[in-house]
Length: 231
Image: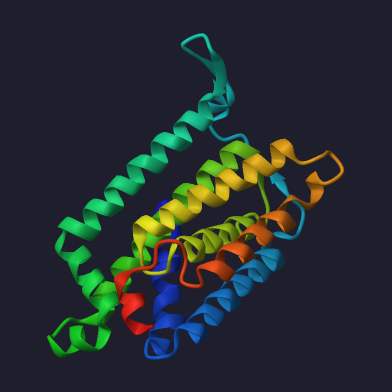
């Protein structure tokens, strides 16, 4: 499954994003959303809109005791462990490996990187492959948690991941991670403390918090130095 998702990510780059690599960021963002909705509708045509149940690693839904103080589903512990492991691997690749340094150079100064002889296509293919691997890991964890497969299952994750990136700071990996955890914490707190009548509108309150944050810090909480220089 992971290999299939990585292959789809690479094909998406070659077909959609490579012809637009010199376009403005807003055009790339619109193209990414258009690709997402195209893939959703393709799955709708192939498999229909009916959700399909799947029993994947059901043993992870069992609860375990933590020092006798609380009982937590094994899946939650596995999710935390996988998240930390993937984050550390991603950080190591970006900061220590040759391809990671090339990615950072291409992101911070694409024109200068090309002038210095950096080939954009291999770097972008590697970046899309990594994005596909992360998407596959998160989708597997979601399927294990919900036990359901349906064509729109990744939309909410995509929206909240995008919000976390924007709130944390575009172009800053640490800021994006902090933004993601912040959005998650706000969501859980609202789900816990909102009155029962208001809980169906939880996401509206989350978007309101995001609006307030971006109104006060338009570049996010932790903008990258590259973004500051442009402003």
